[in-house]
Length: 175
Image 1 (cartoon, rainbow, N blue to C red):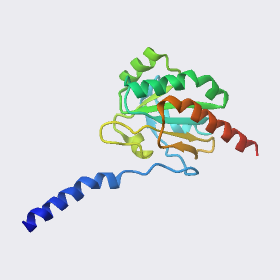
Image 2: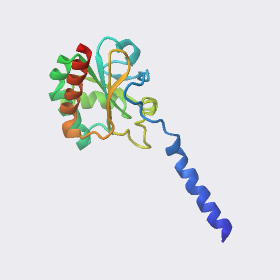
Image 3: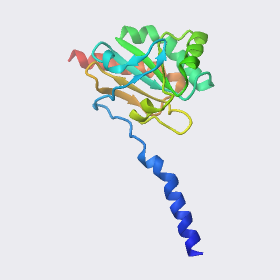
Image 4: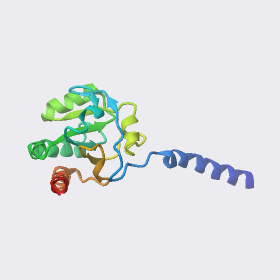
């Protein structure tokens, strides 16, 4: 009986290992991890965009699902205000470029969607999960650092929260 209990404990520990090894999300003030990835409408090289704009990097589970559609449309509807605060938006999920193209076209999304099919970008930002990315958002400032993050995003309030964070960032830049 003792061997069976020990085997059960070892199996449980092995199941927990991938969770313990997952990347922690970068914190406010940390240098933003850079990446290159396929995307719709064109590939993304984050290094080329740092310094030019504040970057809203939002991770979402899946194209065409209810919460993700609400979040994407909320960001679409608030896009001009975010752009007015010198921000560009990048959405990231495990979906393919083809799926992103259909999603963007169907909902008239004016921002880039990154196809993180190998989960590498999500891993860099601590958003990787087994089947879908976590719903988290980061703002990367022009210095290439994490200026704000939300690890518990409410899809219906995403744009308003990001806008408030960008306004606060703009005030800090003036000081």
